[in-house]
Image 1 (cartoon, rainbow, N blue to C red):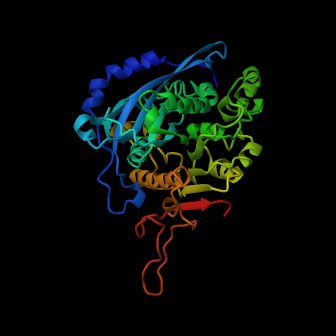
Image 2: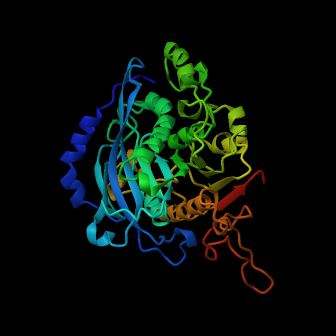
Image 3: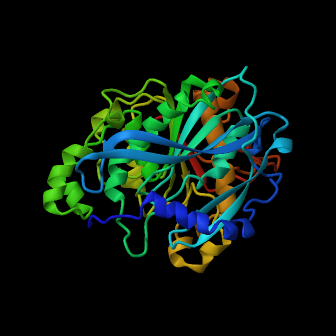
Length: 431
């Protein structure tokens, strides 16, 4: 892997600004009305949802372009939150603007209300920090951010600087920014937790003792470290990734850190959700630290994952986790693309772009509905300690319904309609 400079945040911002009219004109709705077969917890919650875009700055961070000196690391955040009941009158419909890996602009219509009033400060809500993959963007899981906010969470989703579609020409320089991703992903997650708890706008809305991290792909790689799964990079591992030999030797100890560079994990983290987490095949997380990790964890995978790997990747990470409250949800015949929103229409014009979203054996909207249902059940159970929500976490591995003697089907998983959950496995503990 060559070390290449990426476009600056300023250039990316100018690019997005120059395409703002295109974005607005092409805004599209990805989701249909929720069908009757939607899993129970995938229906929107009681709260109206507001959304704001913030920028936070982590001062004095290592320059991961040259690995010499420090600079201030600026991060853009999309923040979804429970809003007051009059938000529809005082806000404007949310539109999420970004670019594909090819650089093509797109604009998606959401169900939140831009800059809507916050819910009354008489209540506080758990904080969820959400983290995209390499490459990606902060709204890539907007459907999940909006959904969790409607059920009483504040969700802060990160644009990881050096690792977004807007900054990297993926076709020409697919490895650009990867060293920054390896070093900064977990540190960004921890910093956003701290920044949100001190933010003047949201501080009173957040319960400071209830936080969870959701990561997709490299976001999951970082999240495992953030909650205590230490990195253990070897020079040979980095060399296999394409780092030149001298750099691999010097970077290995730099990348090998625990808990986002802290001496111990932040106790405010109460749970972990990792979609298609990367790193298991490369053995970059120390097995001993994973075995000592007791935080409730939900891992989600496709059993044909061709990026993170399944049997020697995600499934191995799951087996290494020491938590008694650990779960693995598996989409059978799915690959790596099990967390992003469905593909915008423009993505179908390029193999490079559609390959970031499309699952040939699955309907993308079905995946998003199941993700909403099971993620909410897990977080409500293990962050909010809601025993009723725990009942939605399946006890049996397969949601296979068999015909009984009376001709009726055996019951589906809790919250699922008859015949709707086929093709999904749910593993808990060491079963």
